Length: 249
Image 1 (cartoon, rainbow, N blue to C red):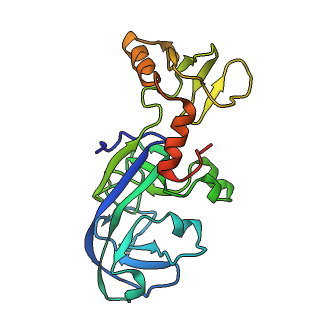
Image 2 (image 1 turned 180 degrees about the vertical axis):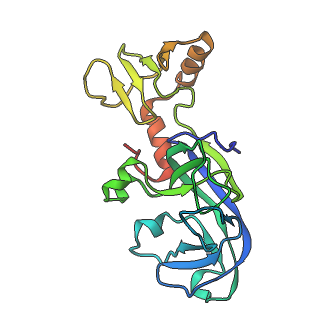
Image 3 (image 1 turned 90 degrees about the vertical axis):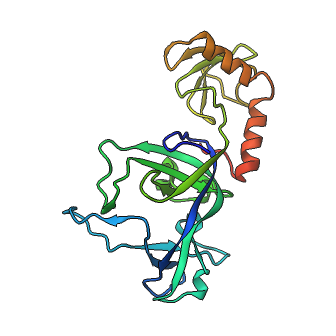
């Protein structure tokens, strides 16, 4: 399992939420089912927004659906087509593979109409979805499905893959053919020679600086050991096989 707060862009996770009994509050439409949310409380002290305790979940029917519905993680048991207003059901997230497209921290916490107020936002896309699935430019900065770890919903997270786990954003490395690179994330490599990135850095890698400061021997050894076998291309291929998606830009 992975600790809440310890997430990185590019992480491949299995996320789940234990199914909990609740009630259908409104008639089921083609795209949504509205249920009484069992985990949050209404923030009655919020002067600018009010929440009625109901959450509308995207309904999967197969075929062509909106990106919002396609990204939905929560499911009902029984499924929405068997439900009507007033019925009892269970809501939760079956184990689902996602990849992280954005991680944001909030200090102070976000002012939401529910409690507890989120201190972190994790944006993910389900397996099989990538940025290319979202034509709206608003999705280019890390859109998908938002999760607020620690907000009362009993999510569990298992880390399946963290590409370049030994590197940090801002690290500078030299590769096996003498090119120097800046690491901006698993799929964000900038070569200092100004030439196109091509197939990416050639392994093994030598850590030159750690986020702009001299690196320790331990950090350099960790980077060297983690890139002693394999290649950048193999890392991309492993990530794509887990996510069934193209690397995010």
